[in-house]
Image (cartoon, rainbow, N blue to C red; front, side, top):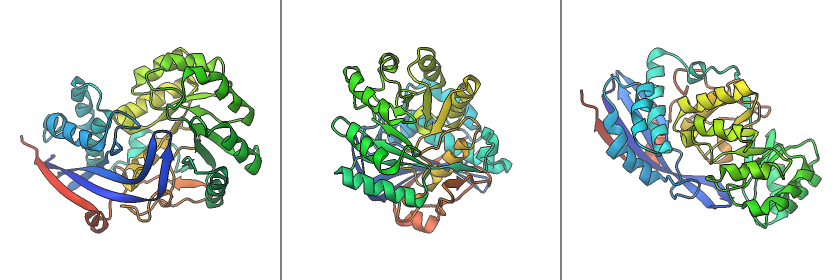
Length: 367
């Protein structure tokens, strides 16, 4: 039985600034949900950023959505599956829905003694890890940073790109580290369809994929782009549900999909997208949103499903944080271990988490 839900706000610094085509992040403003009942705590981490740059959602907005509309849907016996269905009455707000669904799911799986990986159908005990490299001040800086991550053992490098920082940085990385390096790029919607011929210059570098080159609303334009660019197109921001994924694949807008549970409303929807792509033989990989260990643990369970055939952005804790809120996830031979305990399989270090927490509010669940 669910007795109360706590909203916890916290702040954590990144080990270094992370620059993309839409801005620079130096810290994470954190929102966690804790579902309490029967001596069990379920955890969820909101992946929204402090500003609506990656998507229209932002962390303060997610908290407002949760307080006003989503938390009142929860009764003492609400399951994650039931919540997901009843929450469909509200349009959008995928990240707010995802954090509550995750906390509910973690709570019920802990009560059942079942790991999230087992629940989702994971088949791997560890997953290959890639790393996302932000836009650097110079190409020399970029090469130095990439070398450091390769020394750490990462199996795949993803370069953030934007107009003015694309072809030449990719060329430099290929020259420096060779054709065997698994290399891909991510534009975060920074280009227009009129840039198609320019983006086609990336074909010469044998990239795994180019991720979300055009704005998220322009799904059909990605199909047009795919007829000009030979590098496989991967969609991220555009994919909000299994229905959008199906339509994007049907029209040839992409041949690879980045699955982020927070972006699609939670792990139940993420599993549906995985299953669709697995049936069609479409490669998927697990994207990241600079999650702390709570969100990272859940992502590893997802990334252990059989359709995740490309290394994801499931990087080690040390990639982003001097100290994580859980036992740190450590890279070993280019892989991270999938937690096997009940639910997400790990618990936060409450003493440390309390030290970075600004407030905790409690919502009692009536019924």
